[in-house]
Length: 153
Image (cartoon, rainbow, N blue to C red):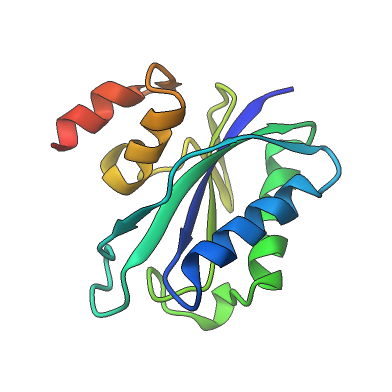
């Protein structure tokens, strides 16, 4: 079973409660076990900066699902928590953001699915929580998480 890493984020409503409930919802899905969850950190928005601050973290999931099926579950959980990707501004405010960051050591580049996440190596708000869970983890094609994070500081 591949270990998948999921980016967790929220900047609307009760951010912490939403993220905790979303992690519980993921753990209740068939074929998914939540292996670990990082601490949540308060961060500045990226891209569209005129919006509330985010709460971000990372979850490690043991998944029997394919990467594509896991992504479908993530999108479904986002919708259940009020996220409407088709009706929102890209990088704008959102009740919940679940990003598939890594899926084992897979490198996938398909329409609608890119793993590792294409901006993972540029984002301290993802690399910090990821380093908490797996500092020596290798991001395919980019390097070790700890090294990537050090480059941003």
